[in-house]
Each structure stands twice: as C-alpha cells, then as structure tokens.
Length: 634
Image (cartoon, rainbow, N blue to C red; front, side):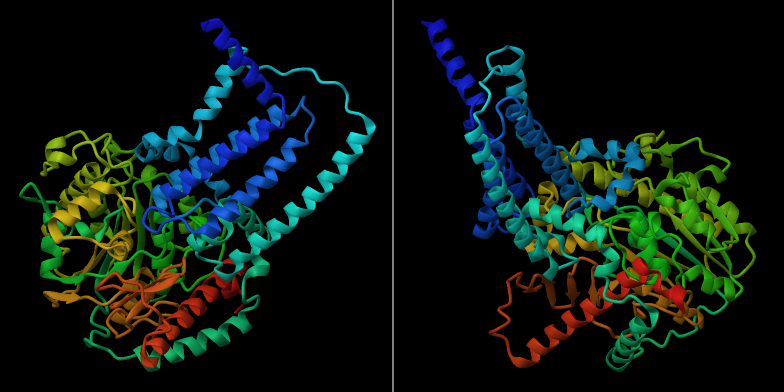
C-alpha cells in the first residue's frame, strides 16, 4: 500500500515537472516568496497595497507564460535558475533593508571589494524565516537527487506547433515590454525615494528602473553645467538668508584661532543619550560631556547608508549619492571641502581612522585634500588590539592624543572611531571589564550587543577626554562629536520594546525618527549647558564651523546651526521639521498621524509645499554637482 501511494506521488510529481504546470507552480511559489519579502520590508508597518500585489502578479504571469512555452528539455532547468536568481535577489534585498532600510542598487556592485566586511555583518542580520526563500529549491534538489522527478524525452515538436509558439513568444515579449515600461516609468516621479519606487514599480520593476537609472544617471541629473546650477543655488541661498538668516546666539568668530576636533562615532544613535539599563547609564561619559556643553538633540544622518557618506556630507556640505559612491566612484570631484578651507586659513589639518586605507577608498580621497597628517590603520605604531577588524577606539584615541600633541596650533583634526561597528560583538576586545553595563534580558540580541558596543565606545571617549585634559589640550579646544549613522534596524523588536518600556508607546513616525537621529553635541570654550532642539544635519557642520572661525565658507548646501532654519532633508526625499515629517505623505510628529493636505489651512499647506520645494532643489543641485563634477567647471 505504501509503495503504491509513493509510486502515485512520483507519477504526479513527474508529470508536473515535465509539463507547463511546472511554470505555474513555481510562479505561485515565487509570488509567495515576493509577498514574504514585502512583509519583511516595506510592509512591516504599512501593509500591502492592492496595486503592489497586482503589479507583482503581472510580472510573474509574464514569467509563467514565457517559461511554459519553452521546450521540455530546457524548461525545468530554466525555471530552476530563474527561481534561484529571484530567491537570491530577494534575500539580498531583504538583508540590505534590515541593515539600511533601503534596497540594493546595481551601482553598489563595486562594494563587493569589501566582501570581508560584508560577510562579517551578514550573520547579525539573518532571521529564521529567510529559509523560506530557498525551501522549495532544496526540495527540488532532493527530488532530483532521489530521482523522484526526472527529465523525460519528448517527441520533436511539429512545424505547425513550432510556428504557433513563435507567434506566442512574440506576443508575450510585446506584453513584457509594455508592462515593464509602464511599471518602470512610475519610479521616475520619486527618483530619490526607493521605498516609494518599490511600492509603485514592485521589486522587479524597481530593479529594472535602477539599472536604467545607473546607465543614464548623467542624463537624469537636472543640471548639466555649473552656470545653470549656480543660478538656482544662489536663488536658494538668497531665500534661506531672508527666511533663516537670523543669528540666534551671536557666536560668529568665537573659535577664531582655536583648535578644533571633529569626532565621528560609529553607529551612535541619539536614543542612547541619558538612558540606562538595569540601573546603569549606557553612555555616562558622553552624557556628562553633553550636559556640560552644547547638546544637539535633533541631528539627523544625511542618508540611510555608510560612514563614508557621513564624512562626505561633513566635509563638503552636499548630500551623499548611492551607498558609498561619493567616495568610491566620484572621489576625484572638486568641492569647497572643509580641509581646503582650513588649510587656506593656516590651520594644521589632520584625519585619523583605525581602518585600512582601501576601505571606502579613503586613502585616495584624503590624499587629494593636502592634509598635513593622514593617519590610517597602518600609520599607527600600536595595532595590538583590533575590534571587528579595526583599531580599537581606546588604542586609536590614545595614539591620536600623541599625534595631536605634536601639531602646530591652531589645528583641526577629524577622527573617526569604529569599535561600535556592526555586528556589535566587540570581537577582539581583550578586556571585557571595560564594559560597565549588564544588558540582562537583551543578552545576545541585536539590541544587547549594540548597547554593549555603545558602552565601550563611551568608555573610550572618556579616556580621550581625560587624556586631552592631562595634556593641557582640552580647555582651548572645540570638540564636535556626533554619530555617523544608525546602528540598529528601523523596526528592531527589542529596541521598540526597550523604548516603549521607558517612554511609552511609539508611533511609526517615532521609530523612523529614532532610526535617523544620531547622538550629537559640541564643546565651545566658554559656552556651557546649552541645548539646541531644532533639526540639524551633517550638511550644516561645515557652514557652522566656518562661521565660528570667521572663515569664508564657499559652496555649501547646509546652513549655520546657530541660525534659525527649522528643517532638514535626507537624500531619500524625507523632510524633518520640529513638528512635521515627510515620507511620501506628511505626518504630525506629535501624534504620529497622517496629515490630509487637502484639509489643512492655507498657511500650513503653503509651509509644507515650501519645504517640498526646498528639498527637491537641494537634492537636485547636490546630485548634479556630484555626478557631473560641476564645481570643477567654475
């Protein structure tokens, strides 16, 4: 009886395997995987729209039709390879979304040179349900190996049927082209917001649009020449000076002739500030620094991407492009960069990072800036402790102090830490007693590891401040400290629980802002206990420092932090004000509710429309500058 039942299953399975039904079965499986992908990414808090499901189904229907008319001898192999490719694509997009709340671009293919760092990060991103992307493939392989299914030999197709198939193929190809063009074109309305592109075009349409965008990126930029761009830039700056030119604090020139240290902390988000776990402060040294000096409670990262993108925005006051591309692809571009401005003002300029020079192409980037001192990992004498492959923060800071002691005065030094880098396991830390917190129930979770690495980063920061004081360098030095980008994913479950337990229920808008907000503060000699709550960004750092030092700024899309501009933009078409948040729709930050733009009064509508106009102009100018190297044309 059992053998008879098994034989019947083999017959049915083999018939499906050797007929067009296989296309339908695999097509439905791919549809299921794609819906799983949506639920793991863009639909986590926003649901699945009918248009998205219908669009995805249409792409898969075309796939089913094309593969179903293939000859039997190649159909199973073709479907298997397509299924494998789609599964890998969905997994990679899913992992990247968890990491960066964005989607992969073909432009990032060059990032494969950093495969060691990528592999190190992947285990912390994996989730159990990702096996569903490959479960059917594993089953098919088992069925083939066990010979439950096998490829049958079919008679050669008759001429009439072959001609009919040719006609059908041409019809399907026409449909495919029409559908592809229709869906891809929907992404053009929101060229910088990948989430919206995904919802409008589906995951398949998004990747087609992305390939087209990369091929035609220069053509897609709004400004092809400097002269065309500079007119809109000057008009924008004039409007900003009129509306946002009020100096709120009178700090102009306060740092003239003073030393400056810019300290960029890996993955340090704002939510750790003044937070405790099991009765112990997570970042006691940073908390003390911020309490005593200037706190920027609403600094936002400029893009959902990399450390290099943060550096790019800090130095040049323009937006990042695709993930890390500003440093890897466009590193020969000309900007009014911070180091050049300070070189011209007779400051001793330096950059330090405990990573290898090849990573994010930093060696080539910073060698072009005529720094007086460029120190990457191989430039430090002591490399005896590396954490997740980079010089430990403590070792970096101690040696940074030794270098700074020798600098001519005044100096400006940009120091980039790395120990709190994903996967946040502090692999390589020799003395775990330097960690002062117990994460309790969050042990071995992403949040627990993150808080532990943030605590170690804070410990090292404390040593850095203490050493500056011992060497007599602290009192006369301005110190700007900020996180480069997010550490945890936007909807990390443990983070949501942790914040909810402390602060109460969190809206979707709350979590999106938490994701994008980084720790930030500044010490200006003579200024104490000041808190600035208005939104600011990395673009604002260069114009702020030049204002404080009485240095001509040159080209900057950011504005002086100590003036009254009340909004910031991210390079993926998000806008953040003190009251409102824009992400395809406007939201009230206080309530988390969506704003019906047709129902608001005219004054608010005009205000929100003005923010949208400024956002589009800033990003269009920035992308044109980077992609077309417009500032070189001056």
